[in-house]
Length: 384
Length: 170
Ligand SMILES: [Zn+2]
Image 1 (cartoon, rainbow over the protein chains, first blue to last red):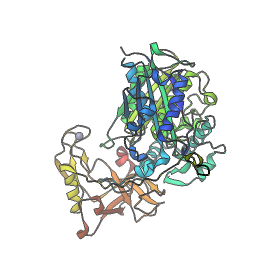
Image 2 (image 1 turned 90 degrees about the horizontal axis):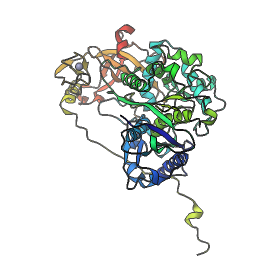
Image 3 (image 1 turned 45 degrees about the horizontal axis):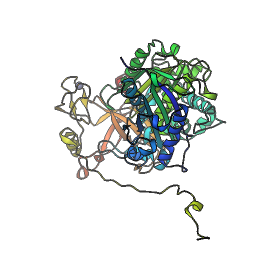
Image 4 (image 1 turned 135 degrees about the horizontal axis):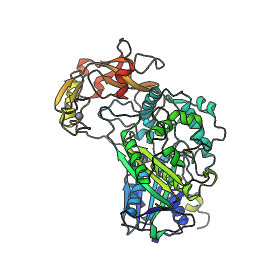
C-alpha cells in the first residue's frame, strides 16, 4: 500500500526573458526558498532533493546538478536529476512524489528551471542530425506539421489557434509571476504577428523565459504549512518512440495511456465533469484542442469546439491554463512543474487572482520530446 | 586606498560569452549503413519488419513496434507524397537553408513511415498536403553515403494523392 503524498509548499520566480541579476544557483534558490517558506520548513527539514531541467545544451552548462547541490541544501542528502525533455518538470515532480509514496522519505524538495537567456534553445533544438536533412527549425518547426494534420483531420477553423493564444494571455494578466503580460491582446494582434512556422504565428508560440519552480512534497505524518495540502490522487508517466510506422502524431498513444492510468487511480470516469481545473502543456496554441481530445475531455475531432464555445476559458466549465500556461511563461525545464504547481495552488486555494472558486480536483499535464514523454497528476483538497 | 574603484562599486558581472564548438563522430552501425550505401548509389533503401510487414526508411535495424530485427532490404521508389508540412520563416543560428522554405513529411511509395524533406521548385503558397513529389539527387560524382546526396524534392507532376491514402501516416 503506497503512502499518501501531498504538496505542502510551492514557489516560483517571476519569469522573464532575462534574469541577469542572478546565476542559475540564485534562480533555483529563489523558488526553493519560497516553497520552503510556504511549507513553514527550513533546508534542514528536507530529506532529499530532486531536480529537473531540459537538455544541457539549452544553456551550455553541462551537468548543472553537480554545482547546484550546495545551493539547494542537498549536501549530505540524496540528490538526483531527472530529464525527459519538455515534460521534465512534470516527471521530476512525480519522481519526487514516488520517494514519498514508496515510504523512503518524509519530505522532499523538488526544483525545476531553465535559464533560456544563457544560450539558444532554438539552436540547440536545430543541430544537424546525421540521419535527417538540416531542416528542423526548433520545436515550432517540429510541431507545426502535426498541427496542420490536426486541422485537416478535425476540420477545425483556422481561428481556433488564435482564440487559445488570446485566452491564455488574458489569464496571464491575473498571474503576477507570468512572463508575458499583454493587456491589449486580441485576435487581431495575434493575426498581425509574424508567421514563423506556417500555420503558426509568433503570438501562437510560447516565449523564451528564465525561471524556476519548486515544491515541497510530504508524507501524511509530516504535513506542515498554513495552506491545506494538495493530496495526490493519481500520477503516471508514459513514453513512446519518436518514430514508428502507424504512429499517431496528433493523438499519441502514450498520452492516452497516461491519462487513462491517472484517471483510474483517481477514480475519474468523466474528466470534463469531474475535473474542476486543468493545467496542460500548450506551448503552441493548437495543442489545447489536440490535448482536449488526447486527455478524453471530449470525443475525437471535438476539441476545437470546446475551445470555440469558451469551455476552457477562465469562466468556462473546465478552465484550462488559468496561470496563463506555457504560452505565457516558458522556462522550459520548469514549464512542466509549473503546470503541476498551478493545480496544487488551485486546490489549496492559494492562486489569488487566478483562483477558480471551489476548485477541489485538478489535473496537471506535461509532454516533451516529439510528443513522446507524458507525465500527469491529479491533486485534490480531499485526502484520498 | 581611497579613490580606487571597488568590485562593489562596479556591481555584478551580468554575463560572460563562452563559445562552445563540437564536431562529433557518428557510428551508423550495420542497419543504417544499408540506407547510407543506398544513398551513395542514388536510391532509397528501406527494411521490412518480418512480423508486421511495415517498411522502415531509414531502418534502424529493428521494428520499434515488434522489437524484432529487420533483415529484408526493400528498394523504394524515388517518388512519394507530402503527408504534412510547414513553411519555415524563422531565422536561427546555424541555419543552412534560406527562408522561407518548405519542410515536409515525405512518404515514399512503398514505405510505411515518412521522413522530413525539403521541397523546392514550388512557391511556398502552393504547397499542400497530398502533393506528389520526386527526389532530385546531386550529380553522380557528388554522391556520398549521406542525406546530402538528396538535393531536395520537387513536384513530380502527378495528380495529388487522395487524403485516404495517407491519412494513417499523420
Ligand atoms: Zn513490426
